[in-house]
Length: 116
Length: 113
Image 1 (cartoon, rainbow over the protein chains, first blue to last red):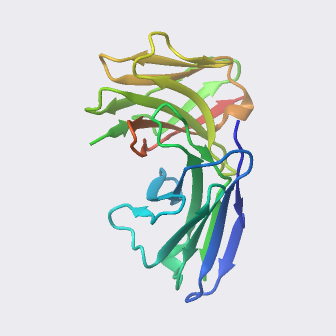
Image 2 (spheres, rainbow over the protein chains, first blue to last red; image 1 turned 45 degrees about the vertical axis):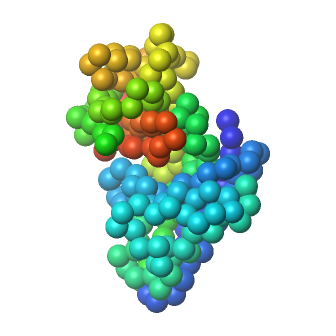
Image 3 (cartoon, one colour; image 1 turned 45 degrees about the horizontal axis):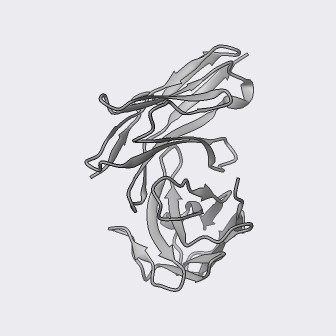
C-alpha cells in the first residue's frame, strides 16, 4: 500500500508558540490531503481538506487562522498550530488520497502534540 | 448527512476464535464506499478492507471479511482466527461520491490468550 509519513511523531511545546507538522506521501502523488484530530479514546474528527495549489476547506468549528494548512505540492502538506494552548494538545493525523469514493485514504503515523 | 454507528464500545474474543464487529450506516448517496481501519496503541491507522455499495460479493482480505447487508445498511467486520496482535481499536468509515470520510466511534477489541 501507499506510504504516508508525518513529522514530527511527537512534540512538546510551550503555550503561545507555533508548531508545524509535515505530512508527506512518499510513493504516490496525493491530489488531496486530510487533517484529522483525535482526542483520547475518541474517533477521528476531520479538521480540514487540502488540495494541492488551492486553499484548504475547513470543517465547521475549526479556526482556520489557528490551524494553518499549506499544500504546496502533490506530496507535501503542512499543518501549523499557531499560538498553541494546552487545549490544542491532541493526536493529529494526516491522510492522503483522491476524491474518488472507491479509493481509500492512506494515513500517516500521527503526531502527538503536548502544549505545556 | 452521513452517519456511522458502532454499538460495541468494547469486545473480547478468545485467541483463535472468530469475532464480528458491528457497523451500521446511514446515507442518502446512491453510491458509497465502506471501509474498516485498525488503530493499534501506536496510533497509526491501518486500512483493512473496502466494500463498494454496488459490489455484489462481500469483500475479503485474508482473515478479514466484510458482511455487507445493503438493505439493512450494515457492514460488519468479521475477523477469523483471532491473534493477540489483533487487539486494537477498529473504526468503520464511509465515503460518498467526492465526499470526506465519516468515521464511527470505534470498537476496542481485546484478544485473550
